[in-house]
Length: 300
Image 1 (cartoon, rainbow, N blue to C red):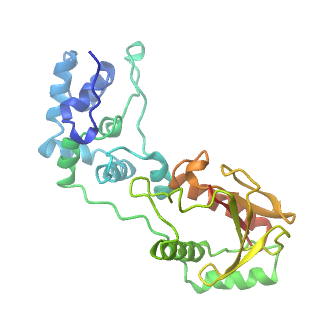
Image 2: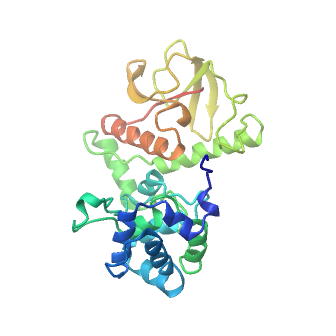
Image 3: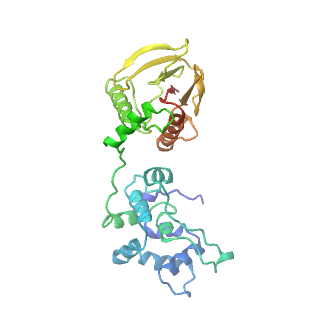
């Protein structure tokens, strides 16, 4: 008989534990104080399940370190109840410790999976997520921190006079301007976004065009569209030359180092968070050698 898929949102705690192998369950049970004589899987599941309710669940939560607790909080308040490593690392800068799998051939090893792995390994069962929400606060939303300190602005002025010194580039403000442009295009009906994917629809995009902004030496094959007050840059376009899967920096236009980026789903990053992190990384590399950053945006 074919196995039927069941989303974690509709799973009970016992159904979630059924997905674990017996050796991992033994390790989790020992972490929770079980007698070594409990070795059968049904017994292990019953024992662990009893510790994932009420005050016992609060005790399990208290045994997690700060970053593990953050991982649980981010997961239980997510739509799919699955831990997103890429998004979490982008927000917190590191990943929680999950330990290692614990197989029979090293059953006497001193290190195995952590309690964080017990809660997050295969996705959070809906029943467990609801229990945790009773006392785990919702994490703060991701924010772009904008520096307004005089020290940073003094650094900018100093960098203008000393080109060999490190330059502070205010990318936060540029990101906010880009967001305003996208929202304006959506409001005016010039850009349509799919309700399901969150990406622009194929009808909205011009697959045969690529666009250039913040560039001092556009080549002759680019045509000026006009000046965008939000981007604070002239915007150029031309017939597409580069592949839409690129995500790299090289002398692409006029011999000037240029960031060439396709839409997230066309690159190997696939989703917006790792795509944005990579773009910012390319900006940081470019800004170490240039006083300005130029971007060629590819449309699908």
